[in-house]
Amino acid sequence: MQRRHFLSTAAAVMAGTTLSQLMPRAAQAQSVDYRALVCIFLYGGNDGMNMVAPRDSTRYGQYAAVRKQLALPQDTLVPLGTDYGLHPSMGALSNVWSAGALAPVFNVGPLFQPLTKNEYRNFRTLGKVVPESLFSHSDQQGLWETGYHDATMRTGWGGRAAQARSSLVVSAAGNGRFGVGDLQAPLVVPGPGSNFGFDGYFGGPAAARKSALMSLYGESGQQQIYNAFASQQRDTFAVSDALAPTLRINPRDNPGEPINAAFASLTNATGALTTGLAKQLYQIAKLIAYRSAIPTHVGTTRQVFFASLGGFDTHGDQISGNALQGHHAGLMKTLADAMAAFHQATQVLGLASNVTTFTQSDFGRTFAPNESLGTDHAWGNNQLVMGGAVNGNTTYGAYPELVLGGPSDVGQDSWELQGRWIPTASVDQYGATLSRWWGLSESQIDSVFPNLANFGSARSLGFLQA
Image (tube, rainbow, N blue to C red; front, side, top):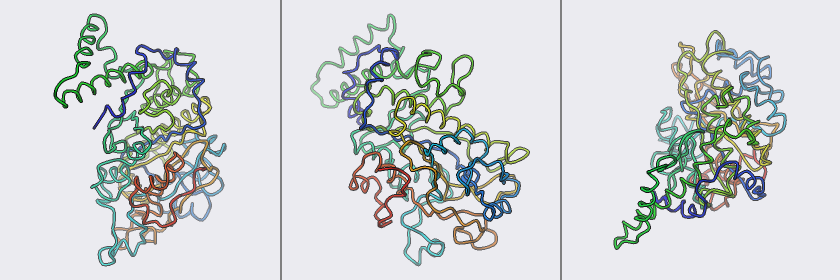
């Protein structure tokens, strides 16, 4: 990692800037030529069949017959038109759908090329390539984050896309592979109220120590490795000074902050955010609002962000009492509430059409439940895309045929008829559609997604405006 590559302009930002001082600059900083991608990774393998379920009578009957106790009551689904509905716990996204700013994308997963059931089951004799280590958490997380079909790809597709525009991924959820580029790692930021970098470390008497270190790092040495290290240390101090004051702010610390109203329903009486995902998206909203005050290579006109929500490995007790209650219902509410608040924040900033939020997850889960009122590892999955640039009020991709052992299901023998869907849309096509809107050229997209050429002219899934 060459951290100085993305911190090289940080010294231009004054240390000690407060959020309230930044507010006038942020209000003037809105740019037509600005776009941000915000990835929310659902770790553990989200049950996409209960995130977006069918509502029409024929397919709902098929759905309920297989899902049994896990089936969501038809009349409780949050309508997405007449044919589909969101999990009842996701009501916060109803208005986003009504505004045309939300779209489900069906049956997406890692692929090397389009794959039929016959080709999957006979891939060796037919010379087809099947993605590596299907149904494995760590492997499939890697394939989603890298946009590739095996573990040889070290970098993430978000990191490669950001690097193509001289930016980098800012992660509010740790140092995942999604944000890794050839020469840079994601910039990891903490939650609201936490110190960032050297923030708070050199206060009081320790200020003299910082001054001495900066003086030391300002000297040029005879060895190239020393000079590189010194430059990296100078830039690390600079980016810490630039970002720490903004990142430290909680909603209670600045009641006049415009985005606070958007997150009000997720803020408790003491002014603290109530869920981990809300905290991550609040940090991202602040960095979008005040991007003109952060280092250029962190991104000012093109930014990529990463957030995550865990706990989706629901092998058992996915529900509690009925499908409207339990672990998965809680996760769906956490996701929807935070996404809706974040979308409202982009509206407050006048940037709803400049920010696109999308989900990813390890894999889908089996259509058929197991004996523990849970679901097991599968393959293709449904995702959500949100933002003012979404071609909303419709769905994208092909919803699986809800027949165990049918053409969508990898299974053939009786013991394997569980509903593990073969994807009909690839991570490459999904990511390319997002990256094209974000501003990558077709040649850059081909570099970021090396397998995209295998899908011929189907290079876009169509869910975003030009």
